Image (cartoon, rainbow, N blue to C red):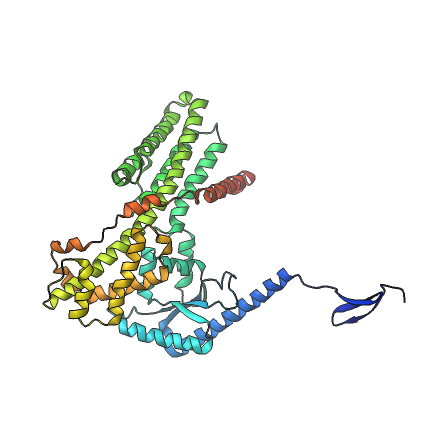
Length: 446
């Protein structure tokens, strides 16, 4: 037999003979990258099967109380590792109850659900466990944990709650969320690109509309109805300039862009090439500043919500002391000790003081990235339950207790936020959308 001649095969390999050695060469070996992809897909499939079995058993125990069981986190995205948990969302129905589910009852139910999950697959972790009314309320308020679970989740059991929420989020219909604000900013970015590409086709009017879309985005984010384009500059001045969140120059630019649109409509002969260039640049600058303002407002709202919840937690403790005939301390730093000595709230409640102190310290140091969203959500939820228990006492508190408000300025944190990382992505999407429209004009006409 000549050297290097193939003489046989062994388990998918072929033998090749060479002087003084024998080697095995793979005929159709799969690349390591493809193997890893295949293994991850199988792993993902097995994890979903585990949650499906868990959902089946949960339905057998709780029946029509189960509204949603969904997987979210790294598994649906195919980014999980061998040791990764299966982050799971469970939503139970509480709409037949007149009041909120008591804290003790919720913990008891959660323990049973968690125990059942462990029996099916110890990797299943109930990361988010809201009741139905709480879930919709969290979506309405744009709570980060609820938004993230819907955005990245995939339902294995859904009675018609999860997918509608997901569609609303994807279409930017949940007010104040990243998707709804992004949709408004994208309209501005797309409009700007259209104006830029159609230099001789009613640019003043298009730039005017770009200004309106971009200016309406932050106005919507603070819960206001977007005004007509002629009132956008004044509304921006009233809402943001006076609160030192926006420079006056951008209000002036908005007015100049609006006036330019009016000129283009009434006296188009006055629209020179120089004026076009000048207002294109102004509009681009204005849109970019609105991006940054949206980021700043998002940071400000988050900080304000945290500070308000913390303030209410402190006020509830003061109210509880007063209702038991105990005079609250003058210094809020002494409040935990006085509460522990005079009220039988238990260890879990006392730990809430430390958790709030840790979060407020991070806020004060402008280290919002270090705040754990899941821990914050649970702490806010526990705080709301506690406040509900002493609600009547809080209503009777006088204004003199306002001095317990923590010394944190949401505007200071907001000014540190930047939207620069968002702008290139939206600009790129806008450019592609304009190019697609130019390639398929008949689709645009439809």
